[in-house]
Image 1 (cartoon, rainbow, N blue to C red):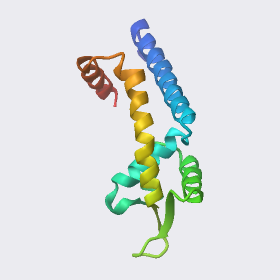
Image 2 (image 1 turned 180 degrees about the horizontal axis):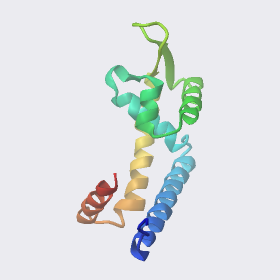
Image 3 (image 1 turned 135 degrees about the horizontal axis):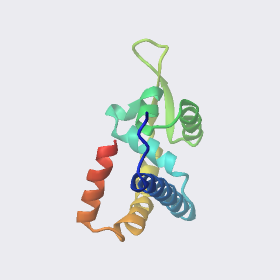
Length: 144
């Protein structure tokens, strides 16, 4: 027989999902009001900027982003069309591809951070002490 979650565990799950959805929606709204593209663009640009030589294979970007493949592919297409990233052929095998961040992509990611960090502070930092945030990180780390 499978163990059923307690009421407390079920309530924690529901709150976690609601809070995650609400926070993401609030951050997305803040970015939109500031005239920026969606949060997924920032996340992709951040991962590319952190990567060695500013480039990742699409499958690596997909793993970092935790998005389904079709979403990553469309996202890369949009970033490329906007001049924020470029597709490059792998110099070793000639068949594989890399996605590389452009200088325009680096610039946008840095500009977006001002609004994004403000949203994090407004929607999370203003409601939690540093001690609370550390405890939350610990609790969420157990679920990861």
